[in-house]
Length: 248
Image (tube, rainbow, N blue to C red; front, side, top):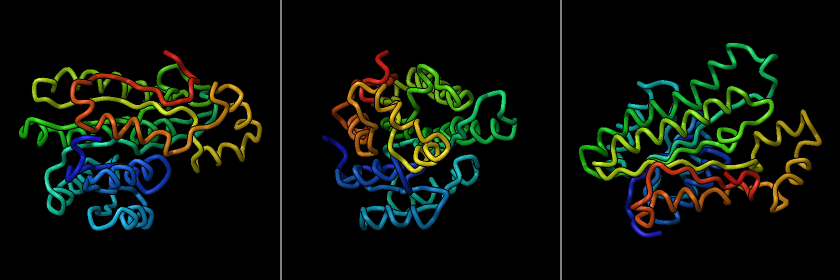
C-alpha cells in the first residue's frame, strides 16, 4: 500500500490474534510499529518477528496514564505516531441475564474506554501535525448484535458511533477515522468459546456464505488499506470483513 514506508504505527493488543497479524502486515509494508499488549512476552515475540523497526511495550488500554506513557515511549523511540490501530478487546460469552456488573465494567473498560484513552492520547499530536489515520477494530456484533454478547455488542456499536463523530470533528485536520468489523475469526478466544459450545464453529461456518471462519490475516488487508494513502479520501466508514455473514 502507498504511504506506509517509515510511518509510525501504534497497535494495541498486538501480541496475538488479529492484532499480531495487523502488526506483522504493517511491518512488512515498511511501517515502524509499536507493538503494545498487556502480556510482555507476546508483545516481544511479535516485535522480534517484525525486526529492528518495531518496539514492544506493555500497555494497559484501560489506564489513561499507562497509555500516555506508552505513547511517549513510542514517540521517543520511533518518532511521532502517524497511525493508531485500536485492536485490544475482551469478551465473556454468556446470556445478559447471567452476566454481572463486574463483567460489564471490564468489557466496557477494555473495548470502549480503551480506544477512547488511546485516541485522547494520540489525537492531539495528529491535529498539531495536520495528518493521521485512526483505524478501530469493532465487530459485526456491533452492527447486528450477537447472542451471548450483549455488552460486547454495545461497546462495539459504541466504537462505530464514536468513530463517525471523531471523523467529523477532525476532518479539517486531514485525519481519517475508520472502523473495521471482523466477523467470526479463528483466534484463541473463539477456540475457548468452542470448548464451551462444541457445535458453535460448524454452525458459524454454515452461516457464513464463504463457508469458513476468518483467519487473522483476512482482516489485515482492510486495516492496512485504511491506514494507507490509498484511503486518503475515506473517513467515517465502517467495513465488515466477515465472508458475507453480514451484508449491511
